[in-house]
Length: 123
Picture 1 (cartoon, rainbow, N blue to C red):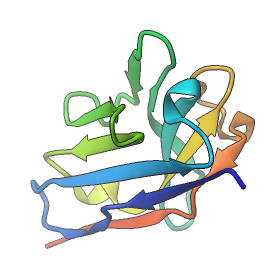
Picture 2 (cartoon, helix red, strand yellow):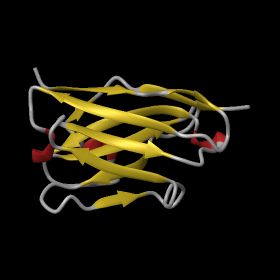
Picture 3 (cartoon, rainbow, N blue to C red):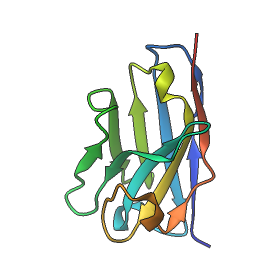
């Protein structure tokens, strides 16, 4: 069965850092575009970042550009989201998802999803 497993969430103070990891099971991550999405209570799910197949171009939402970095670890078969200078508005459940046809901001297009990991930014 193909699935994704997220890890690395937690509670952090504003200005702090967290590193989220997305580990596919049953398939190879570099054959899919891998996106990270987040959802805060009462809000719609929004795209945070995505890394494409092939040249591995990464895309970022304007709200996280310059603070978040997305990368692939080919040896570990993971896609990692380094989050620095975290703000309270970054709080939410973070999901990784896989899409066979490239990066998209439309979360409904992604075929495979993880269960999510909670990120809370609070003093």
